[in-house]
Length: 360
Image (tube, rainbow, N blue to C red; front, side, top):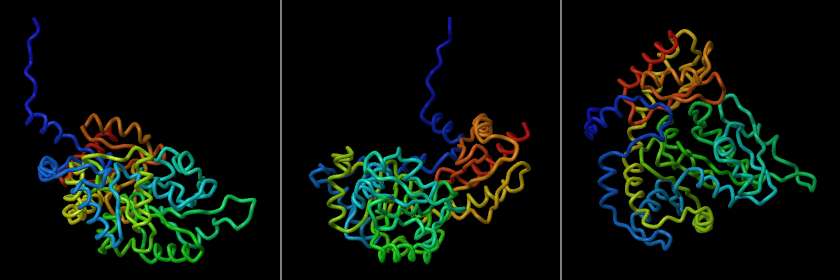
């Protein structure tokens, strides 16, 4: 007769989770105990009617932090980006973006499917566009071309390893775009990481963009949600587009309560993630078969090249050592992302696992 085994305790389950070093993304973070308490105790109402007081507080605070008139809480960064693109463009126009931009590669072709636009891409070495590059791609006025409708920028740039826009470069793009009659949308999913790297407030480094989306559920550690900020008329129009996309949530204050803690308290700890990313980069640079320039790691994303093994194979071998990581933009690239659930000891375990996997 088979012996019956008792289910593992909650404590055992927590220890099992802690044993895994998850470097796949900063989206995998678990809400803090303070967030869970706030969610349980949140004051709620119907947000579609504008009656959820916790959502309203979150939106008001986000607008204040970014120096904008209004904000809207959305379930995901993709929804926030695509609402903005829809509002800034007309069907048949072009959207200028970097060639590995999130809005292009990771948002299900919604620029075409939802807004009826096509992309005009610019490949860069580090994800940072300049006005000189953009100006060459703006379509001349006429009847034979799809007209340029919008410029989108990404700060930090995910697929280029969390690179940060120099403020002067960002401001020049916005100023010149506005002079040319073009709006600029900022995919600021990790804008607080950029602010931490620059030592400047998010309000200052994003001031000249027409709209900004930022995520609560990445480095800031909330379980769900992003915000889109802009002018009051822009955000009022965004509410109808959010509803069109199925983003009209009801008692969403349960989620917004965690978002408020993420917004107010979590930016201060982002430098820890950046320091851990730099540690990983420096250690990886010393491993035979890996190519990386540690000086290029600016925030919490580490992208490195494998010289003798496909990234998918290293990913498989790392999983056997309870380290989770994904390939990046090419078959030879790996990406490590640090976050609040990965401390220095976990980074050391990850490096040991890489060494063991490559030796094997």
